[in-house]
Length: 175
Image (spheres, helix red, strand yellow):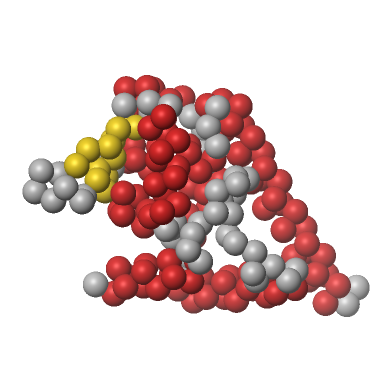
């Protein structure tokens, strides 16, 4: 078999594997906790850093703060998190888990986004650049450049565009 068809087959099979894992992990998380993957990912991230600032949580999740606030609003309504403001600067909002949130985290499975971020953070910049170019090619092939980046298996959109988030993260990394 020629090299090109083999590579195309490998790429398509890998895309299928990624979709399968994301779907299965997310379905298991929803069944076990009743939360969407982004909600579960948020409370797991909060549990790793007690009393985390909203902006820090957004950076940790590679999401725009406005997207995170929407997720937090729903978690607060479920009494899984609490928000508090600093006395010195009332604009700073910190998030912590309630006892119900802590209990839920203990029994919850991993989420696809968390696995993905943890794995990507281990790659070198060169590998990330190659992967980014390849995924950009796939997005272009599918004509999906203008589609808003939804969170995995969620209606939640990461707003504004991921390009502005990328600029913000580059600014943080450069400081």
